[in-house]
Image (cartoon, rainbow, N blue to C red; front, side):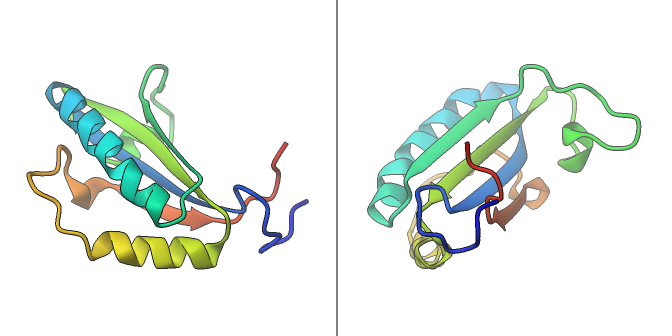
Length: 122
């Protein structure tokens, strides 16, 4: 098991899920790709954005319910790898200070996010 703060690549991860309208897929792609240079400048090691392909309905909960996805929306699962939590905290603070033009291509109130310390990295 990895110990917190081991200092190896991927030792801190931000995870996100959100509902994005099908019609805004290209806008979401452009927004995410456009944000990468800043995340990289601020210390991120990797950014992965994924579009739902096989997201089944669950009996108790599921990805769609978690973000209250509506008809015509897909779930996006994304994560950012950071070298450590300190770099992530500083990088996220810098991202929040940026002025971004345009409307977000999703409802940020339904986004679920959190920071995670990896316990298995194979």
